[in-house]
Length: 230
Image 1 (cartoon, helix red, strand yellow):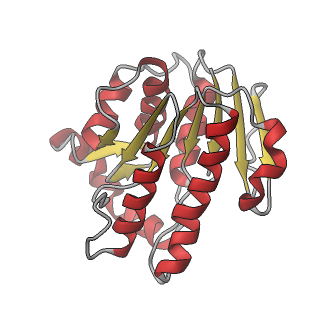
Image 2: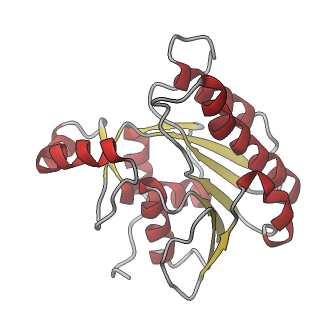
């Protein structure tokens, strides 16, 4: 399996990258982002692109992949709808349209969020924009596309969010997040589970195209982690 990861320096992307590098069935990982991850691995190649809207300029490096894990995202806090749309919708669609031409047999996995509004008419701006993005992705001619809608994600293995208020929230909830996961398995997932679930839906598919936390955990359980850490 050859995979592309966008947003590998973010909290979710770090977890996805870690699981891809650990997985025996993933033979090549290429990350695309504005900054390098700092990871080194024989099967990892990193492409640093200052303007991700210029992804067409590296099209020759993006052919022949089985999956794209699109983990890139920003918080809507303090952003106008136009600004948030440009980053969340327009960039995602620009990348996906290129891949639909280059790799039509690809599986495209998009990290969105619980509460996403596919009617595109709700009161919450971020949910409308995410919903529009989901709708546009699902209309593209990929082999399959999956929308991952995690709610609370517990970061594992030293992974931290780049967003300050996320870090503060995780610091406060860290002592009880494990307990919450055991008590409410459908409400909590982990960075490791998100990564394993992505690998799983590419390899085995999933009965529905939208995966909430419970689905992510279920798909991850069917994709056991590698026996030893890297």
